[in-house]
Length: 343
Ligand code: N2P
Image (cartoon, rainbow, N blue to C red; front, side, top):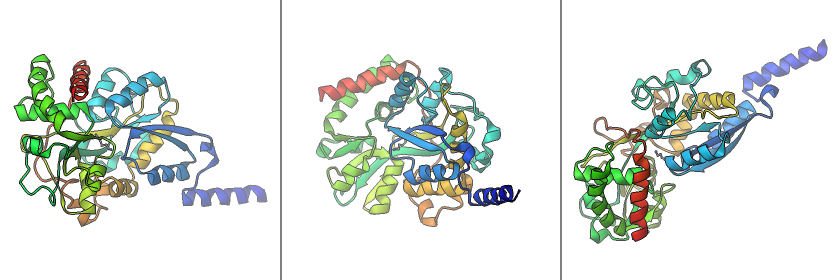
C-alpha cells in the first residue's frame, strides 16, 4: 500500500515535470527531414519529454527524399516534403491520413498556411515552415544594384555565384525570366529554358542546397540564390548581406510534416508533430532556422528583431506555390543534370 502510494506520488511528479514515462520506453521514431531545418535541441527535447528515441536522417531535396522513402520500405515514420512533393505523394498514396484528435496543437497554426492547394483540408500534412528563394548580395563586394535573376547571372559574376542544388528551383528561375508559368512543365517550355540555363550554369561556382550561406560567409562567392532562412541567418550575422525577391517573380514554398503510409510508428510521429506545434518549441525552430513561421501562437513569442528580418518575413504580397507536375519532374532532372555535366 505504502509502496503504491509512493509510486503514485512519483508518477505525478514525473507527469508534472513532463518527464518520460515508462509506457513509451523503447519506442523509436525514424525522422527523415531536410538538412539545416530541425534543430537537434528540439529533437532532444522531444526525446526527453516522451522517452522516444529519434533516429534522424537528412536530405537536401524532395526528390532525394521520395526516392529513398520508396526504396526504404517502411524505414521512415515521419518525412518533411515541400508542398508540391506532398501533393505528388498524396496522389501516389505514399502518405497516410493524419488523426487530428492526436494533434490538439493544430489550433496554433495560422489559417493562411493550412488551406493550401497541395492539401486543402489538411488531411495529410501539417505546416512546418514556409519561405522563399531569393537573391542574396554581399553589398560590400557588389556595388551595383541587383534586383533580378538576370542581374545575378551576368558574366562579370562568373565564379562568384552560389545557387541551390535543386532542379525544380533552378528551372523556375529561367521560367520567370522568360515570363512562362512555373507549373506548366512541357517540352516547348523546357526547350526555351535550356539555352538560358546553359549560360547560367557556366557562371555558377557552388551548387549547394544544404548550407548555401557558407560560401557567402567564407567569401568564396559574393552573390547567390538561396533559401530565405539561409539568407536570414546571413543577415543576422552581418547586415552587409541583403535579401530580395527577384523582380521577375518567385514562389513561396510551404514545407510540411507528413506520415508515410508504410510508417512503423505513426503514434510517435503524431506525438512529434504535436510537439513541434507547441509555441515555445516552434519559437526555438525559428531562432535556429529563421524561415517564415506558420504557427501564429509561436509568432507572438518572436522578438521584434526576428519579425523584422527581411528574409524571414519579406515585404510584398502573396506568392504562388509549386504544384505537383507529375512525370515532368523527371524531364527537369534530366535537363539540369545534362547542363551541369556539360559545364
Ligand atoms: C532547409 C531547406 C529549406 C526548405 N535547409 C526547402 N523547401
